Amino acid sequence: MNSGTSSPGAGMGDDTDLYELLNITKGASKAEIKKAYHKAALSSHPDKVPDEQRAEADIRFKAISKAYEILSDDDTRAMYDQHGMAAFEKGGGANGFSGAGPDLDDILAQMFGGGAGGGGGPFAGMAGGAGGPGRGRKTKGKNEMQQYEVTLEELYKGKTTKFASTKNVVCSHCHGSGGKEKAKAKECETCKGRGMSTRLRPVGPGLVTQETVPCNTCSGRGKFYADKDKCKRCKGVRTIKQKKILELYIPRGSRQGEKIVLAGEADQDPDDEEPGDIIFELVEEPHKLFNRAGADLQAELEISLSEALTGFNRVVLTHLDGRGLSLNISQPSGKVLRPDEVLKIAGEGMPLKRSDARGDLYLTISIVFPEDGWLTSQEEVKKVREVLPKPEAPETAPELVDEVLFESVDDMEAFGAGSGDPRAGTEWEDDEEGVEGAQCAQQ
Image 1 (cartoon, one colour):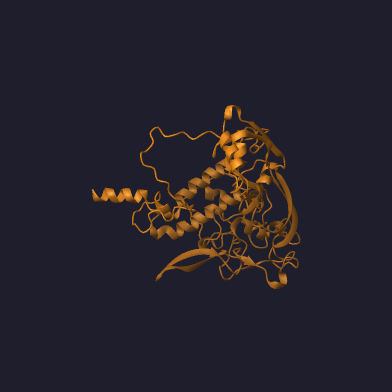
Image 2 (cartoon, one colour):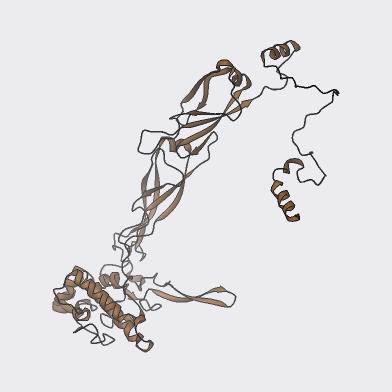
């Protein structure tokens, strides 16, 4: 009997042979079952037939899919081989099978989204879309993403912290069913056991779109328990709140944007095979002294005018681990430290993860000039002039010399003010490109 012989429509019942439906023998291996399913599903897919045959093809496609799900699982295949489709009828019934073993309604609800066991035979509700490939248990729950702010000191030294987490866990009293022991769930009348409902959503003036969403009545399960049959502990929710102390370890040398994963610590869901993870994304707080780029650090080093001219030997900064860093700088032959000059200290940057190596520290020189009035007499002025280099005289002196008066100003705001010249004031550099553009336009 090939896969295109009979049509397993509404009349399919206990005499349905799943092996014949997939055109395989009872001794077929899992690989042979999978191959036969792909071949049968491809030939029976609703998109591959004319419109007038699509409804029948849709029913057959879902029947083939469910046949594959039963025969590809060792447990359900053994149940089928022993009892046939009667094993999947509500209440069982083959050779007293209903009185032993797991609740078949729950098994099929997990496999087919709650469509089986609700009446109408083992393939009831197929035309309505319940079940089919992709409707079974999810492999893993949803991950929870959180940002975690850390200081540069914590990233330099590493950090371990403990915190309390309250999450949903599967109710141990009802094992995630939501109902009392031996209680039976009722099919949801709103979604007819499908677990999904269709609604219209506005997307613009006079425009709507149709979307399929989980049913609000049964929370997407396709069935629910009456109030008297709900689990006393979880009240039918299937999960309870549990508080747990978790430990977060941040390795030294970690960087902005890196993720720390606490595996399996997200909320549990009875429909998931395993819970998701809690994932912390590191957010590095700005530091008042250091700037970071990769494993390197940069800081500004303020020195006095005297130190710039003569050198120094002192602690210049406190590092991220609390150590003081000392520099001994002597200036032979009158060498001078100048503003924005950079000193590199090898091996004093950030540590590299899983290594003893470190980056480098770059110190940018900033010279602090003396306060006004630091020279109190003409005698002191004379001594400084004698020590400092003499200014170079111009090669040719002008014939006419005027002695002019001056005043000190804070900025260039008044430069060209009111002239309309784009080079005026502090906007000169910002407006330079606009001036060139205007000149080009006039040519």
